[in-house]
Amino acid sequence: NAGVTQTPKFQVLKTGQSMTLQCAQDMNHNSMYWYRQDPGMGLRLIYYSASEGTTDKGEVPNGYNVSRLNKREFSLRLESAAPSQTSVYFCASSFGGLFNGYTFGSGTRLTVV
Amino acid sequence: DAKTTQPTSMDCAEGRAANLPCNHSTISGNEYVYWYRQIHSQGPQYIIHGLKNNETNEMASLIITEDRKSSTLILPHATLRDTAVYYCIVRVPPSGGGADGLTFGKGTHLIIQP
Image 1 (tube, chains in turn purple, cyan):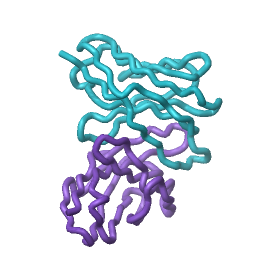
Image 2 (cartoon, each protein chain N blue to C red):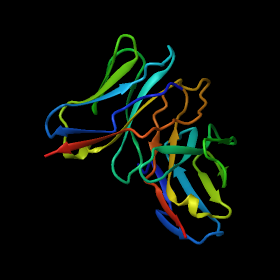
Image 3 (cartoon, rainbow over the protein chains, first blue to last red):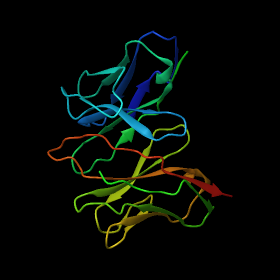
Image 4 (tube, rainbow over the protein chains, first blue to last red):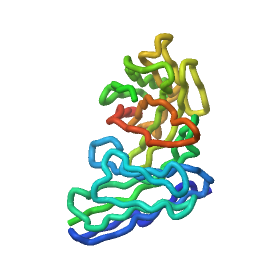
């Protein structure tokens, strides 16, 4: 069982460049999430998708866009990267509803120079 | 969602029980208590959750006080691999199969000493 798979694991971008972080889950989960984690901080929610075809903003959505491509895949796009977006990005998924146990991916370490 | 208060860090000797406290004095009647942990550089891992009764699974036990204003996560026989940041989260599960994202604070850094 792969669980939640994130690609790439590491990325260095120049300011102003764009890129898409990929996330896929194979657990038939309905809901998917993108978080960022800055050094010494807890996780902050960027965007989430309660179900296929829906997306909603989280706590820190500015500078990001998302696409729920299908039930399995949820991508995060940085259109014009800024140094403030240097962070570790985690994707997660869950069935949603009463039991909301999340399964997280291993993260993408992004540095914007 | 109710605010939680956790100690910044704790130490525990290997083989002993690790007891991690969480204060959630403003919890409301329909809010659940969730615990996650994050081992260095990895994504968080779900541990356990409960409403009012004590819960136990293969990883840990969750003790919730009768007034529900605080809870304790217990790792019965801590190992070095239990060194991690432990997050206590209190929230209302979304209705109708929906989702709105968990809010993670800074958690407790538990260090298991050999």
